Amino acid sequence: MRSRSANAQPYEILRETIISAPTKSASPAPTLRGRLDGFFEITKRGTTWGTEVRGGVLTFVTMAYIVILNPLILGGTPDVAGHSLDGGQLAAVTALSAGFMTVLFGLVARLPFAFAAGLGINSFLAVNVVQILTWQEAMGLVVINGLIIVLLAATGLRRLIFNAVPQQLKTAITVGIGLFIAFIGFVDSGFVRSTNMSSPPVQLGEAGSIATVPTLIFLLALVIMGVLMARKVKGALLIGIVAATVVAIIVEAIAHVGPSMGGKNPAGWNLTVPQLPSSLVSLPDLSLVGHVDLFGSFGRIGALAAVMLIFTLVFTNFFDAMGSMTGLARSAGLANEDGTFPRLQSALIVEGVGAVVGGGTSSSSNTVFVESASGIGEGAKTGFASVVTGVLFLLAMFFTPLTQVVPLEVAAAALVVVGALMVMQIRYIDFSEFSSVLPVFLTIIVMPLTYSIANGIGVGFISWVLIRSLGGKAREISPLLWIVAAGFLIYFARGPIEAVLPH
Image 1 (cartoon, one colour):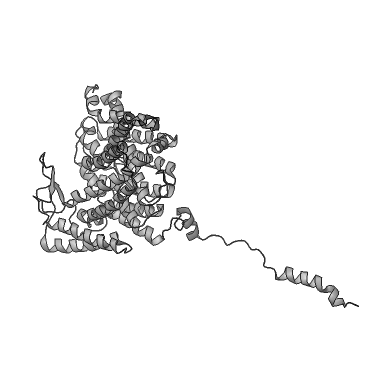
Image 2: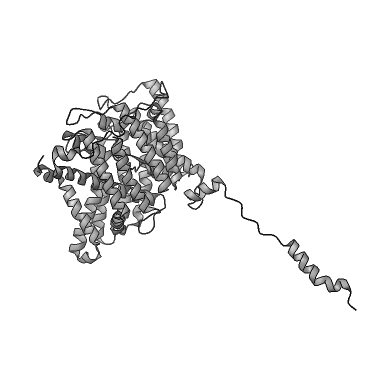
């Protein structure tokens, strides 16, 4: 006879199995750090919080000069009515718009690109536009330009144009930007100077000499950064900037080199003298916010002339930003094989908003800065780096004296190093077919020689369409590229066109 306990065994086994089985519990709620990691894709993109912070700080240090330079460009020029913008107010709104746009871009597009007043457009406004318009009317045109760009991006047309650009040209844009920002670094440091002659147009240093103190500091910073980069030291560029700035402050305290004073003292510092400020805090004056006349230009110079100015602004803004973002995305390792990158549509829309914000604050159109490559060179890959940079710009409104501590010559060394990193992309260009080699070469070389990303892109597009089509490859060219190339022909001929328009 089987025992009772034996008969109960299956039940007991089942009961013990149920009791001892692990119960499924709800997964723990993600921490704030985890949610932020997922939002910015820190882990997914193979970076760290520390790297992003260092990258954001380095981008700010490299770009901080714009808070000083933009007021010098815009503030010293009277408009058609004889009114000038105040330099202190311009410094405040320059920092405000750069900070707001960089944070916005970091949160929406989540890419490590920083924004500030575009040097091409602010110079165009100061040299050309306000000779016939007031500053309020000129900034109104900038706002309209931004609204058009936002519309083009929101409808997808801007992305279609982006996708129509051949891969060879996209890579050439990256390489050209690398040469361009390296050339900016050489010029800002005084390593390369204008001769004020037709031939040769530039020379090495002052009268062929690089023995000035600021240029030697630039070379010291370049060597420090280069060695640290070669040894793969984390924070190489930031360490180089801090170390060279400390040396520059000490040297200035001993030698009293002083500012260049617009070239009157060619051995002086370009733009900022490295010295500890007497005061750290200053309250920003934001009176220029909203200082804009949206449609006044149409009444002053006529609709056709106003439309031509808007056309010029749109082309410059549109393709400068497209080229910069293409190059920066590749430099960060975020670009796909076709040159696109994450959240491209959002990035293009926010970039257009930068023009609206820049015009609305009278700081000029805000756009992506190629100096963002310095933070990317430090390892930044996410929008958190942009948030860091943007917050520092917002703080700079209150600490504008501190933005003048790092000399431009030291920041210039970082640009040269980053330029070298971007030029490395040239290995992805196919040089086996001349019908693509010449347009690629023209794209690369025209950017630094004309000091304009848009010019390089325009020459590249036009030459690509002409040479490829006449070489029997017309069917391979996107119709959109034909339209854009035709637009660039108008852009390059805008001088004669504007001359015949009624004023």
